[in-house]
Amino acid sequence: MYPREFDYVAPSSLDEAMGALGADAKVMAGGMSLIPLMKMRLFSPAVVVDIGRLPGLDTIEEQNGDFTIGALVRHATTASHPLVLQSATALATAASLTGDVQVRNRGTTCGAVAHADLVADQPAAVLALGATMIAQSSGGTREIPASEFFVDALTSALEPDEILTSLRIPKHGPGEGSSYDKLGRRGGRSDYAIAGAAAWVKMDGGSVADARVALTGVGTKVSLANAMAEALIGTDGSEAAVKEASEKAPDDVTIIEDLYGSEEYKAHLASVYATRAVRQAIENAS
Image 1: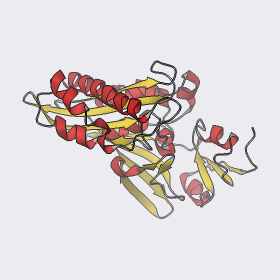
Image 2: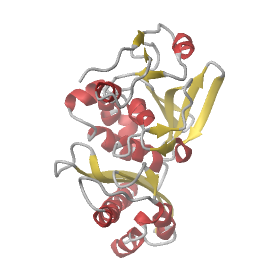
Image 3: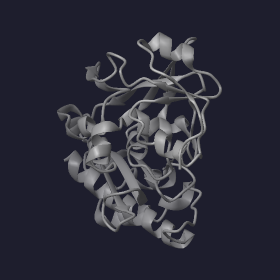
Image 4: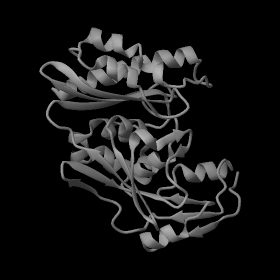
């Protein structure tokens, strides 16, 4: 199927790109999500604003104990960059499991996050890592916590006139570790997630001092499993403690039935993959 007719704008500056945005426009970076949806006519914007050639948006930079990922950083770069591998392991893993080789070399991390797919990998990772989204419009810059960014399926907190220009992610400190794991639709760790979980933990004196767990693929949107994280805090992070806490993984998520499983099955997978992600995060923290 072909998309409906639309106007195409290829701005030469960020200001020009923001000026081209409106209520019926869509931003395109790599196009790996937007173009297929336009072909299926699930999205039919009047204007596509292609930011793929804008300068200065394709870098990963360290800043005051955090690091930023620009809007045009490809999945493959996020997956292999030393700073991400060392300081945000969950995101590096999630990026490495996004799509196939062609998608990873063309699609962008910020694009995947802005797309807010309920079965995507990297949104779960940035949610667990406590990232901040940096959105720009003609009116200025807005910072959006990841916990407030994912509103619903394919719906984020971005306004129609805003562009997600970067992500800011705290670097792992002493005793901190993160991880991501999933079950893909073809039975392995490839393709969209039937269920996936990202976890970040902070260990102190042999106990879990803080934690965040995020789930994808099982609910109406990528969501934090706050009840599980709260149950983990104060425990010794042992296998038994993590397994007991994981029973609460589905508590904060609106579990949905789809072609890949019933609500009961999806809730079970949420607990299984949350357990795996937390155990690996604790191991990575040591």
